[in-house]
Length: 580
Image 1 (cartoon, rainbow, N blue to C red):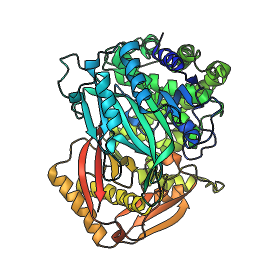
Image 2: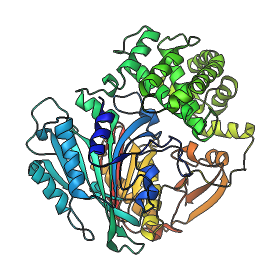
Image 3: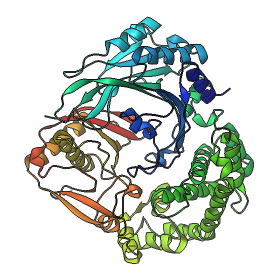
């Protein structure tokens, strides 16, 4: 019995009902391209709507996240993953939730309690220390040295107002050596495996906190991460989730996994995600927009790495891998069987379409790099227009050769040949903020200044990788290959405050997506934006595609202060900051 089945059986024994996994393409939610977490399809019920299955629910949910797509190829990143979750909709609360989590880990999975540690909300001026959770963990046998108290990382709210509350995260010590006597949250050997969120309070627009009459529990545990840990691997792709898929890739390439890890991981991950997207009831097909664009990009990147392994592209290699994935998951997701023919057709058609020009394009690319130190915009567009190279592929190939690509020039040429679509009147991407309070608006505008300051102080190649804003602070993720020095942090902070003091006007302009990019505007996830976008300009400092909201002048922001800079993931750093 695997982890999913053990989990579901355990929570059914505790009075839960299993709910089916929602599709990977969200229903009635235009704000995102894919379901990204187990709780996402349950938001209406967590906000009070009655669920037909009752008040105790559990499931395993298909999730897709593409913000880390370029990170896939290392030992931990995936575009598709499964999330285990159990929920209480106004039923049980902290005592049962924590007790059952502990029981499942120590009795069912038989994890040594000494290898577990937890974080608990330490409290702030508005919400008290979560004493109930702290005492429950002590009662169950987690020693106090393995309990860490934090604030930002142990509080959940979706935006500026609404249901909110503390959470408690469970960590596992994956190192084979002696478990430390005390828990250090900054020690990477401690890996988070489970998060229990307690929706205990309501925060109104004025910032007032009140107890919710109906309290909810939302938990989440990643199948891939926990399976890898339990099986004693440091590489997710060596676990039982992946080893049979990797074996198929070894067979079709006639190469071992060792020494060819990156390409094999990318092929395994991208084909798996493509299978689930193509099998989804939404009927997604490869295209140049929205989910279809992601599907096309995944398949073409897998093909590119298949060629690197000298796989015979004209063979049915992608079908063999896809069938292995379908066989592996069909017990849990019937749409894989129902739509198997569609899945295989999508993969084959896209492979044939791309393969017709890929070989010629790669030869052309080799000629280009032998004569140039940089790929100009017209050349990049030629590779796209003649050989079907998406700009991402050209950039990826160029990076491997240590060359730069003139993306702005590419977009200018692309604009000349692109028939602009203005038919979309509804945004398919919202700014990522559930609330529009004044303080959140100030923080949101500050992220633009921080992004611009990092480019100026640290590297012009820095780009935003994500952000999270509450009324108390902002969190900003960005690509960077080193920990910022104290001098760099000071310069960034001073520069942001300089721009704030200069009282720069913030202007909003509406234009097509292609015009925005051609103008030099930056954005984080271009594929999620509609055809008509809003571009926010802050003086001559910053120009970004964004959904808002923003202040009208930087003087409204207040004093900016960096409180922490740390690693977020491989090649990604995180800054936490406040405004006063």
